[in-house]
Image 1 (spheres, rainbow, N blue to C red):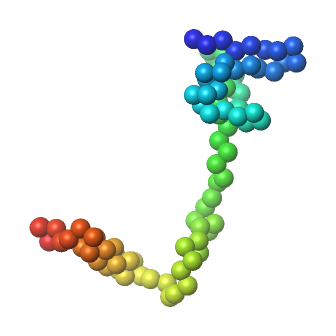
Image 2 (tube, rainbow, N blue to C red):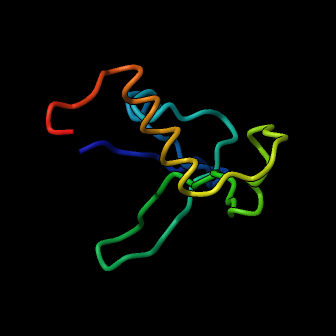
Length: 89
């Protein structure tokens, strides 16, 4: 078990090997939770939340929208082109 220290300015000092193992950087934020076992520090999830509307148009495709059948056909064609036709087909 590792030991963290609380400085006189109430800053938590995390051991160097834990900082390196988790690639922590100065200024990175951690979430703190109080649990039945004590205090839990967790890396804050800084992933930007997106939804489907945020992604529409990100491919740069400018043509007419394709149907699901057209997309399935193009995928099948690409598979056959790259890997050949499967024996069971």
